[in-house]
Length: 282
Ligand code: C2E
Ligand code: MG
Ligand code: MG
Ligand code: MG
Image (cartoon, rainbow, N blue to C red):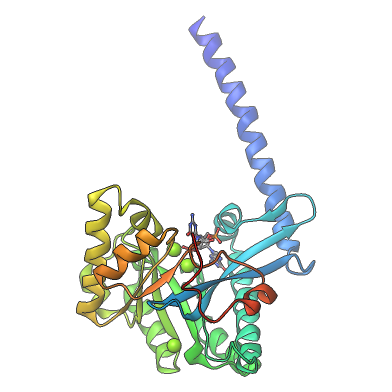
């Protein structure tokens, strides 16, 4: 009896697994067509200072699929990383971001804005990464000092020396680096000191917990202090309420990103945003 059940369970699992694998294969096949079919786009979310003045934006990838709808990056970046397509996706993102930066340089009220771009650890590991970034900036005539690359702590899992060397080359050209989702990974303070970073980004989960859970507040405060110690800017992501913004301000955080100030929007909508978002109610 037990054996028969086990067999059935196995068959059931097998069918489930097969469906999952087929779904993933279909997604991957579709994803590989997304660039040529012009289904990718960037949304832009404002980043503001303590007065609510817009300093720049984070570029966030979206996939507009005819049947699947607007697919968020969490639903396809992991697959793209697994099948290697993330390198092509990443190049598309860089290209589009640099084109946007060049356009903003000529725009009446976007000329001073920075643009943050998310970079997968796999991209950074690619031997051509540094040249690709510099070529892309040059091709569009974009100012490297306006570009900030957001990395996650996962890139510290291996080959730290290579990572530092590549970051330093780009840093020398003016490109900035931010450590995204900070506090959720496994940064050693020793690496943190050696990476040529300009910014730490407090992960959304700590901002979210900050007012209810004392541990969230302690972590946020610690990250702000760490940034001050290492001479890094600190930005909080996922700021949704004025209370969160005020608590972060009190800790010494001077940069904010989150729904309180603006959701990610398409480029035209972003360019129409007021230059100061301090008065936006939650
Ligand atoms: P991330 O880089 O940490 O981006 C912040 C995410 O938080 C975005 O989700 C953004 O829409 C969301 N967010 C911003 N403010 C708030 C808020 O106040 N409340 C809440 N609940 N959420 C907020 P999104 O756009 O779905 O992106 C998810 C992740 O996908 C990103 O996390 C990033 O890791 C990855 N990603 C996005 N674009 C790219 C890309 O071009 N390349 C790579 N490699 N990864 C990307
Ligand atoms: Mg990011
Ligand atoms: Mg800069
Ligand atoms: Mg983040």
